[in-house]
Image 1 (cartoon, one colour):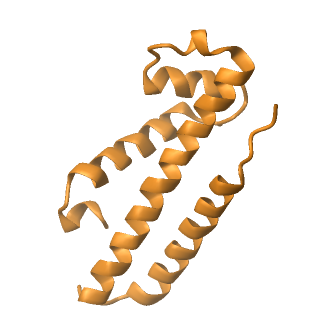
Image 2 (cartoon, one colour; image 1 turned 90 degrees about the vertical axis):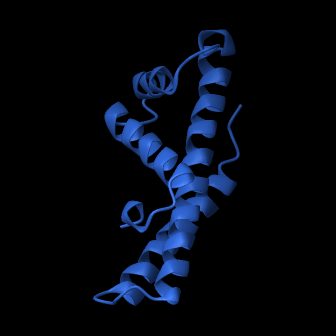
Image 3 (cartoon, helix red, strand yellow; image 1 turned 90 degrees about the horizontal axis):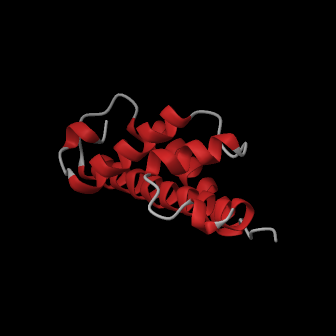
Length: 114
């Protein structure tokens, strides 16, 4: 059964647009209210896209290798299974995304947004 990835594709497109706008608008600027709002939008797009990605990975794995194999799996184990199934190319990159997602969700300092 194929997954409907249209919501994930929309999230990826939104993140790409947010990054392009941020690159264009924020270049060589001093912190401003506008810059803070743009950064917050990029971070929110990243968080949302990351969440959709790993949840789709998990759903695909449950359908294709069985949910019992994933019961109680850590995020690293989930990413290893996704790698073995050809869904991702690098487990360590996905662990970095996970760490970044946790930092942006729980830390509100400007140094994390750079």
